[in-house]
Image (tube, rainbow, N blue to C red; front, side, top):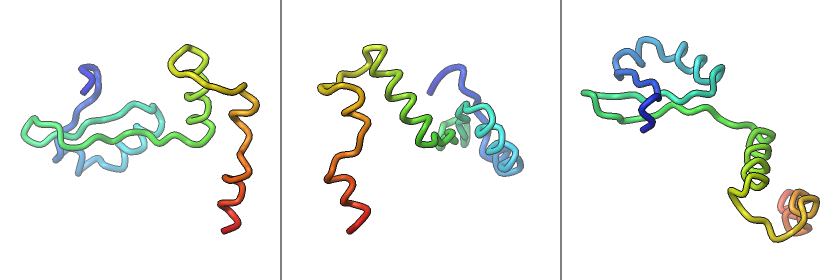
Length: 87
């Protein structure tokens, strides 16, 4: 758990659940839920497809990963994947 990450006791989360979900969606900052001062769950923001793609490309460009083909080839769907929708 990140030391800066916000933590909330389960009782408070129960009372303010919808507001906390809105906050996580707005700020994209996770919130850890605790019971008796022990972490039991984490509310994390979901990434849409564009955000996931942007993060992966950012990681690849910054040296956080390696790719064995050029970027254009990497991003285009393969024939096999294109067939999945038809089955």
